[in-house]
Image (tube, rainbow, N blue to C red; front, side):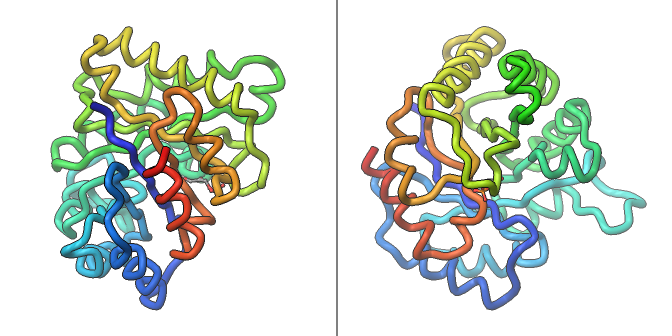
Length: 249
Ligand code: 13P
């Protein structure tokens, strides 16, 4: 069966003091059905793993380099992420695609390296506002899925996150029907490429302005298996109700 996953992406936010928020999430009663993942900045990974020890909370990185080691000043390898005790890594977030010019091919290469290091990859896809307005959403998503996910995907090593770029940090959320259309399409493409057995077991998260007030509605949509949450994952008081809503969905 597919796992429900509430994932927090702290982006470039958080210092040692922020670990108190993680500790609060880790101290809450474990959800019965939902898994919880928090992806702090690389500087906090080791300490986050320690803070989450003996809890159900998993820790992930936000990116890794395509190479497993070498002369790449300032970069972090998948092996380094895994070495902190983290279990997951986000790849291909639209902010990486935009800020660092990451292509589908780059993301695909990083995913292979991450899998070699034993990490589960959360691969992000999503259309821009102009692409949606031009009615190109499914073409864009289809291309990103085909280009960014390596052939060896399974329900154990891959999570897909659908994050419309125009919904990230804007307070704008697609209609439930729009979310459902894209998630159904992603499921169909995963089943077609990897077979029903694998395609059915990959969790598909929605991301973009998820908060406590809209989480229950979003989690009611078909093929939405959880959320990738930015701003509302930074404070335990904001993130915990989203975890609870997913657990109850
Ligand atoms: P917000 O929840 O802040 O819109 O961010 C979503 C996101 O980009 C998560 O990866």
